[in-house]
Length: 193
Ligand code: SF4
Image 1 (cartoon, rainbow, N blue to C red):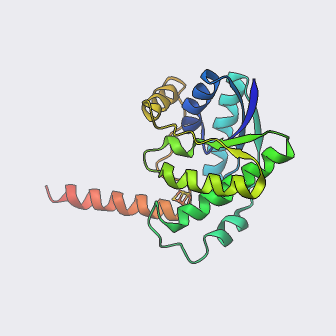
Image 2: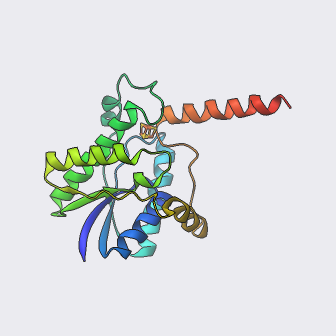
């Protein structure tokens, strides 16, 4: 079975990709590198949940640094961008580049990411960034669009069956703000009734 380094953002999002890669006869090594996640408490919850799930499946699990300064310098000036905007492209690039570098260090020939499982993420953009990094590093990027074939739905089912923690925002402090704005709007709408 050929190894692939799987960048993973959290346990619910990793659940279906791990199943799919196994079905495709690939041996996933999970890599948690997400310095975008804020605050540290949330980072630790997602990290521990993913590690626990990997242990349960007998999947190798690795962790990158929580080097938040790299995230903030990558998105500097883009704080007000909406989700799916330029800030997210920089965030994908940062995390996928580190994944490809880790794969090279470990002599793993390919990498991919769980990010494509989310319907809130633009897979085409993720693939463009993955391809660019593949050219820069010489590590093949496999274009898995995990949300396809009901991937997102299945990932949620697996997460529920395993009582996984579900986050309510993407990860960075700016996405908390978006979530807060949405909730405030919902509250305002409902308070009209
Ligand atoms: S919204 Fe999500 S993908 Fe975009 S910058 Fe924040 S953590 Fe990264």
